[in-house]
Each structure stands twice: as structure tokens, then as C-alpha cells.
Image (cartoon, rainbow over all chains, first blue to last red; front, side, top):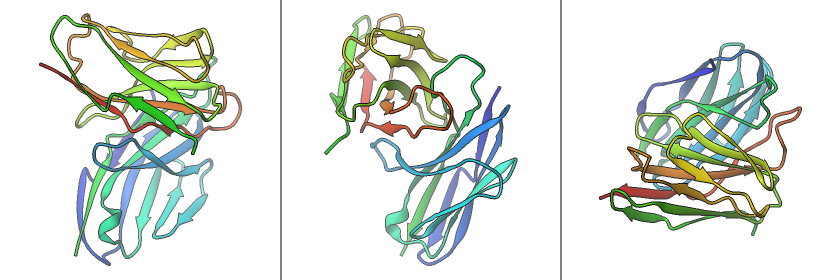
Length: 114
Length: 116
């Protein structure tokens, strides 16, 4: 069974204080690992897809990296508008069932304060 | 602008009632999905559909039903058989059908269902 564990559950940072969020996963053949941002009361918004170990992607203050067991979302010099819940999800290589099913972690709730 | 529209945003249900959540997309996506989100839990898949007039159960389908009569629409009915329906419901879509490569889910804004 595919599993995704995110840590920490919650993180409070001061503006400009860089940090990393962790996503550990077990999957029988990784097709893709996804990062989403979710604001309160809204649907998740896509950030990144990573496909293979060693891959990195960046967007503004965010950088996602991937190893064979985990992914990190690095936040450099965060601002209050970066406050949100960050979700990690994995998609396994299809076992013949079809579909685009993702296994999601429970998320890290980030709060950036002035 | 292309996207997914979910309605209503808030819905209240009395015990024993069936309610239907609407999901419409104008992205020309083939596949559509319904997820349920509860505090402290990851998103869980209820039903998905890869093509019109066909759909499959996800991990927590009991107490729910869906239809896919049009490519653009994938309504979810929460039946009285669902014992704990209070949750945030998210509809999503992708362009692919789960073949090679990973497809990105585009989500709607969600519908919050509360049982009174």
C-alpha cells in the first residue's frame, strides 16, 4: 500500500526565516510526486511535479527536491503570503487498474509571521 | 477562464436526506474525480471517471453515487447511507486517462457539507 507522511504537521516561521518541509513516501514504483498549496476553504493549487530522484524544480521562493524515499519543499525567505497548507501526493506506476489515483499526505500547515 | 466549478460552496443536510454536489469543468478534460477531505487526514478518493458513461469506485465509495452523462459534468450524490458525511468535498480533473506519464490534477474550490 502506498503511503505518504508529511512533517512537521505545523510550522511557524518569521518572515525571511528559511526552512524545509518533508514528504516521506513508500510506493511500488513512483510515477510522479506532486506538491500542492491549499489556502483555507479552497481547493489545492498545483505547484510542482517531480518524476525521478535527483530532480529539482523552483518557483519564486519555493524549491522542490526528490530522492528515492522523500521529497523536500524548501522555502527561502518566506513572506506572510506563503502561509498555507502544503500537500504532498504520489502517483504509483499503474497496476492495471487505470485512473490517475494519487495518495495524499496530511499536509504541513505553514504560518509566516511578520 | 478554464476551470472547475463546484456548487454549492456550503450545504447543510438533515439526517436521512440525500444531497447532490455539482461539478462542472470547461477544461475539456477526460477524467474527473471526487475527493473527500477531513481534518488531520489526507484527501481520500471517492469515485473517478475516465470517460463519459463510465466510472469506478475509489477507496471510500460506500454511501456515495455518481453519474457521468456529459464530459463536462460529474455530480456526486451523498446518500443517507453515508454515516459520517460532514466533510469538505473536492472535485478534480485531468486531461489524461492514467496512461504513461503523470497527469496533474486541477481542483475546484470545494463544497463543504454539514449534517445537522
